[in-house]
Amino acid sequence: MEMGTLKRGLSAGLKTTWTLSKVIFPITLIVVILQYTPVLPWIIQFIEPFMGLIGLRGEAAIPLVLGNALNLYAGIAGILSLELTVKEVFILATMLSFSHNIFIETGVALKVGVKLWVVLLVRFGLAIVSAVIINLVWQGGGEVAKYGVVTATQSVPDGWLEIILLGLQKATFGVLQLALIVIPLMVIIQFLKDRNYLQKFSEKLAPFTKVIGVQPNASMTLVAGLVIGLAYGAGVMIQAVQEDGVSKKDATLAFIFLVACHAVVEDTLIFVPLGIPILPLLLIRLITAFVLTIIVAYIWRKSEQKKTKEVLTT
Image 1 (tube, helix red, strand yellow):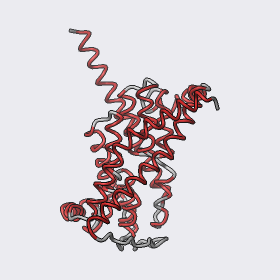
Image 2 (cartoon, one colour):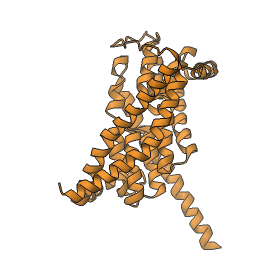
Image 3 (cartoon, one colour):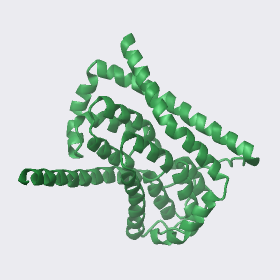
Image 4 (cartoon, helix red, strand yellow):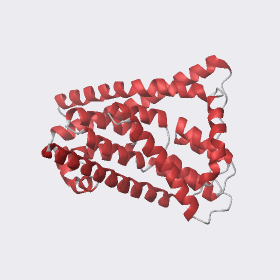
């Protein structure tokens, strides 16, 4: 690898890591601290009465709040602490796969330039609608779920100092994890760019991006998000918007697709210990991502055409 490529890749990686760290560090710190205050229990109490509408008992609010406030692992730990039916676990898994780690991933979306209401409407909307549909359509799954593993209970920090130290530790680990993924990824992408492989790759993916109404230059963003996840894929997206001429429209459409379906390997396999069918879960995410993005792209295109007509007639 040439020195110039390495330098440019490292520079892009460090710049992106710094941009995302400013979101990830403070949010992780605040959320970890909130975990040990009455705030999360208050939220759980507030949404418990609405759980019956989506086929869940009141206590199922616990994994939903943990998964959205923290991450999928916390949500799954919450599920494992409850005795639920297979259907309830599947509904929770589907909801959490659409909507989790909401503070960090929304913060990252805003950095890319996606509107706040778009992110929240898509994530919470998909979670609620999917739960309602599964509850109405699936009549089975009444047996008690048998979990494949038992998670170790985490020791509770004693006093504010320990809570803050734990928050700082988790926030620092989050940033380090980000750097370990984003910096090598940016170096690889820079190498692919300089060798013109990226252009060829984008051309190969053009039929796929065309289907969802996105230009080929956004293909690397989609691949990164599908493979490594939303928060890390956003690093690629930020660079794509700044350097590759990816429009705000394409960035928003790519983000809508990735909100519904990202980190397909990790975020699917993570549910294996819950003893639920994971292939239907993956298919639900993929089909939803395609259908939703195609619909939004179509409405957007029609709206643009209407505006163009109005301009031409005036």
